[in-house]
Amino acid sequence: MSNTKTDIRKISLDQLKNWLSEHKQPSFRAKQIWEWLWQKSATDFDQMTNLSLQVREELKADFNILPVKIDKQQISSDRTIKSGFRLHDGHLVEGVLIPTDDRMTACVSSQVGCSLTCKFCATGYMNRERNLDAAEIYDQVVLIKKQAEEYYQAPLTNIVYMGMGEPLLNYQSVLESVDYITSPAGLNWSPKRITVSTAGIAKMIRKLGDDEVKFNLALSLHAANDIKRNQIMPINESNTLKNLSSALNYFYKKTGNKITFEYIVFHGFNDTLQDAKELWEFCKRIPSKVNIIEYNPIAEANYVNADPEAIDKFAKFLEDHNVTVNIRRSRGKDIDAACGQLAIKEN
Image 1 (tube, one colour):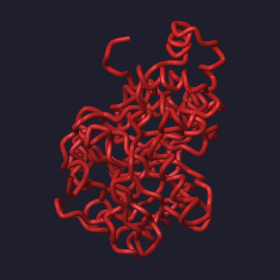
Image 2 (spheres, one colour):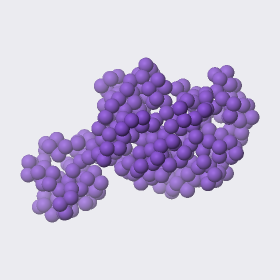
Image 3 (cartoon, one colour):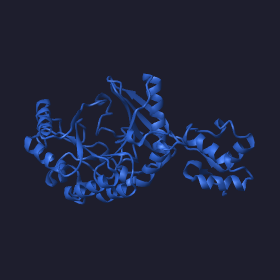
Image 4 (tube, helix red, strand yellow):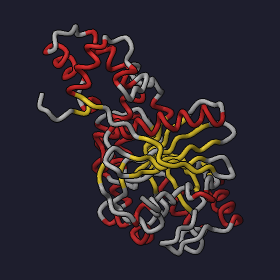
């Protein structure tokens, strides 16, 4: 080992076993340490009380743990909690606990900022500084889980990768974080309670299919024709709806998981019955359901939410054409914690 300490949560179990062997320690210690890190969410070697003091001191000499910490938090009038998470290098990301009558959902970030410049999203107006590693994503889940238990005496029920950043541009760390969350040696969650949301990167959607992931996939669609989608989501210029449709069908054939289309209804842009018809035509190509999402205005853009009557007509058209539709009402708008509003206002 060099004098520079290694982040222990960035090494594999086999590497940990090798280190223990070099230090004349039995291999079963690796399982103990691994469970402290990923099952019990230890953030300090001194918490590992079934290890001898000597082993803990040797671990401290060669390794460190770099936990994410809550820098600040805000509680909305609707009980939503937004947290600013401080990373070890000083960067901030945001995550949200979304409580409803039947579930407690953690919305977590996968990047510091974002590179996709979606015109309606506050994060899209930030620069992408770096990807989060798997432990930094995992830590957000652990901290939000504690908030659910402490503030609402309720267990966390769902996790959505819908915070800051594009998860499929941080592919390896996102899948590693899901492994730590779902592994029996980790948090032992069902992958069916996890949803990864993408703006639509066809090549990586196909890779998810090849990797036969078990979690749910959501596509931020917001327009079902290329001209409109190009206007608000520049990623569509290189990932057209035709290419996305093909990739999503490939994903479905490989995993058997239906796709969720997220559709924000903007006033005067994509809220007509013609837009609903185009969405229905797109849905017919892929086993899917639609979440209609209220828009939450941001200072950087001029979009506004569609009228409630227009949203209801839009949803009814889809339902009348046998599309499964849920209307997601805005949560946490008063603290800029709602969909599309996450952006670091201060450092």
